[in-house]
Image (cartoon, rainbow, N blue to C red; front, side, top):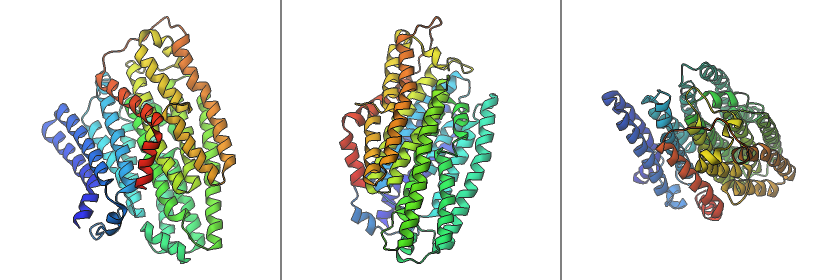
Length: 488
């Protein structure tokens, strides 16, 4: 029982901490207290998750599961993603405070909402039950609906929030109905029990196939994968820029870990059942088709964008396609690659959105790619940082994005999906046009109206930490990849 409490510490700490922040907000209405307490809670989540990584697999297996009724998964993959979510929340808080102040919208609820979203993400990562997974997804989604429409005086922000809410509700319906069918097929909601039922052949094939398909639809919507990606550009564009990076990185990582959990327990079960093996292969091929279309459509759509924020939003769709390759591989190596890419993508995208928010003038000025012309002269440090993020997103060494794609490509090839890897390479080549195009604009084009930005120390901290993360993951990928390897 003691071991279970220790292993569940990250989940308990972030849940209790988020409630504490809400209570402090109600009691004090002091922005500084709420802000710094939120930072401490996220730091506690990261430290406690790192502490649980030292627990051996045998200790985790022997931990008493009576308190959680075997609905919570401990350590390993969960702890790795806890650290990713904690880092995403911290980087977002650092970048958001001054951004909100500049737009006269610093409201304490923003900080507590970020914490509540992280609670949902952590619940997803720790889920060994489909009901727990659904609750985590819904908690995260409801918070995202609110954050999207945070600037209530902006018409497109309200439009994005309403669109996100309506479509997200439909996706939740698909997800819940899929869970119900899987329960009807296997007689259990516990993922480990479902795996045993599938391995022994005690399941209804039709219900399982339909249920898995409906769950895939619901989760692909959360990931913003084709053809369920239509909401993503408008939502990311309508959200506060400092929050957009959080939505399309940590939120995407949480939905992807949900897909990993389902794939590990449903699609990769070891059995001699020929029908199941055929069904599993068919499901993986469908996911491969979704991955390929997502990469191509996302990058082609980003090509046509003149707005930096919308360009990053469409490129985020493409990156969902890349990460899906690891799930298509449905192997331990593929799941490692998903975790690694989620980590490096967090730094790349949050850092890029932080710079966009830094440069963005009040009432959404300086949002066009042409506005970034001659940034090397007016703000050389920002130009250099943005160039690093763009090169990493394009997958150019020695930055972390290169090794993230490399691990995904290798996992896909080893699982027999060479054709998918070739499509991913072509999609990456397409993406270089708009990523390197922004770099060329910053360094080789003149601007008659140079950008003027204020001093935003928190945003600079986010950008600096993101640069460090991207470079370290590029220079020492084996160290971090070895960490994931050890903990899975």
